[in-house]
Image (tube, rainbow, N blue to C red; front, side, top):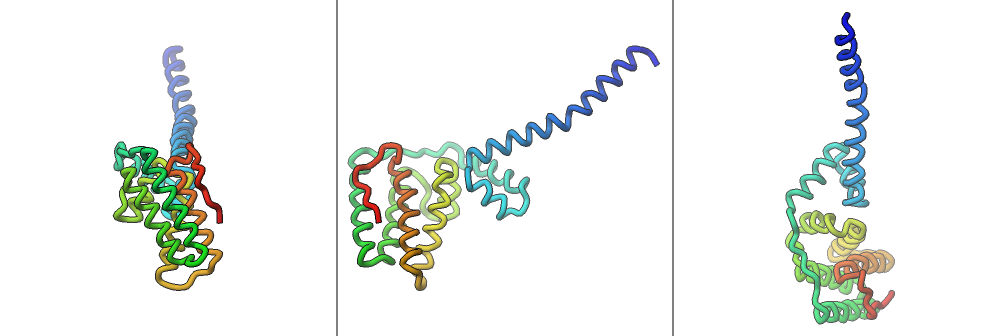
Length: 187
């Protein structure tokens, strides 16, 4: 064999040996980006899909399908109005916990609508929220689940209290949690 042939064989063997490592690195990097972007929703989607590749495909599709969301910040008057309404819901919780949780759900959806999120369907809401508020999305899922059970049956006061706490986490984020409100009433 000539030196040139040996050299080409060595190059080809080297490339073939390195390709799986590069492929692994690229897949790992893409997975890490999805985890960072979707936070806890990445694991939830992977568990629901039962197949990590299918879950990652779904998350990439969600990201591209939504396109750029036209999410608007709230003006100071709207923020103050919603904060006042939240305080009233929390006060109502003391005497009427079930209806207050339902009202908190409606108030969160009102803020979502005002900011430009979809409000017709919970799955669409969750999908859009996962793009910008992945860290608080699980709060919304849990609160929504308790709120649904509260309207159709009995739930404990502790579950209702948890739902309010979960709704508050998302509400605060949607209102602009980075600009803390002075009107935060704790249960």
